[in-house]
Length: 418
Image 1 (cartoon, rainbow, N blue to C red):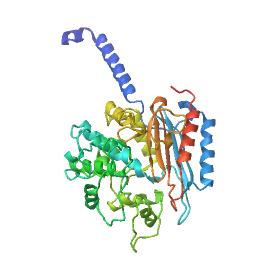
Image 2: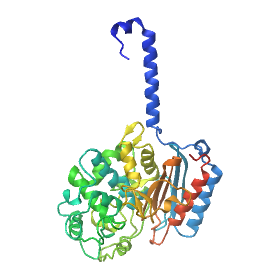
Image 3: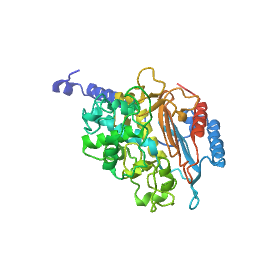
Image 4: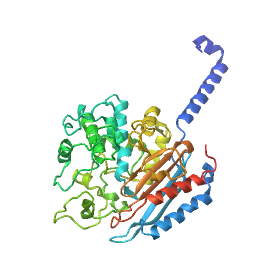
């Protein structure tokens, strides 16, 4: 409705009413678009979670610690934009000395790097019109050719259907970011692109390289500037500052980590426990910043990131991604009729879906080798953060069973599923 200056002078009451109604409409639209004003810790029953059921998490975690599956863990459960459960259990460190776990412990996120840093960076560049996911990788990385790699697309990297092998063979003695890319240029596929699911760190090393080439910023700087800092994820980074080393959960020795990928430790490799230094041996050789691993974060920071996803791209009134981008990342994008179902970056229904448990039949998530995981259920507006350093101190811990148990307990605690 158009109001002239003369009408405005004659009908001030109408104008005030119109302004009030417009304000209400805008506030309602803002509330719908931004269901969370920031995560707060509230009584679980206020968000439809039964406290008596959530207490079973304590029992399950205690049993896992007593069985030496994990030294300690932080568990966070949020629903409807609020935190209903947040507890730390056991020990952050066992060797060389014991330290109690705290809810603000910073963890090596391992493969959660793929979905917290690399995938959102790629999708942000897609939103900006800089990347196309159906483009061949060698359109952006010309040396990514030969050995069956020529027709691999960004989409196939994101869904792990590129055909690339899972890892580099670290028995070859190379060091540095450039050396890692030279290894990538020389590697051959294990299957034709688009034909077989092979979970591969190399997919995300390539994606991290693409971010750097097209943005002229390393992955750590791009992610930190574009979403970690703006989201208020102040405990999230690739290189742990010296001031926060004491709050970081240790893992195991570098000598032990190299054994995973046939690495030959030299005489100067320490047997000391790693703390604030990336656990993944390939990311370590690359300098600590890689598309597949290297990120450190805390439970609250991961919760902020998860809530932004549940809010369809917004957090505290600021938009980071469009709703369609969130949908693209978190709905099936694997080849049709695939048994291993992935979104762009995110796991949906595969052999790696242990954090979903048996009762959640929707959602998406990811795991990390060090003992970290996230599962998000949009249908119930719920997510579960489980952060452990199960590889501390000897690499023999395991957390898959506990992930599923906690998910089932949380699902059973929801009193008003939607």
